[in-house]
Image (cartoon, rainbow, N blue to C red; front, side, top):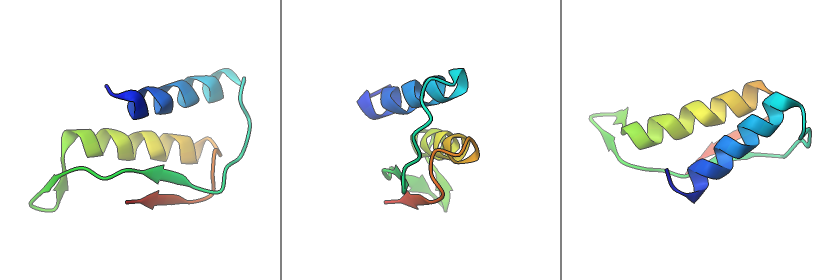
Length: 65
């Protein structure tokens, strides 16, 4: 897991523990490969993390780059 993944994991943990409640304008998911229209495992993990953060109210929008 790279630095971006660790940052998402840390944010997810802090939000779940109630230690961080800032709301941001966007959650940005950096791209990775896709095969036949399906996301690579790395991209799928990023998208799942973004969705979890969105559902916890971190930001009202998700941008995928």
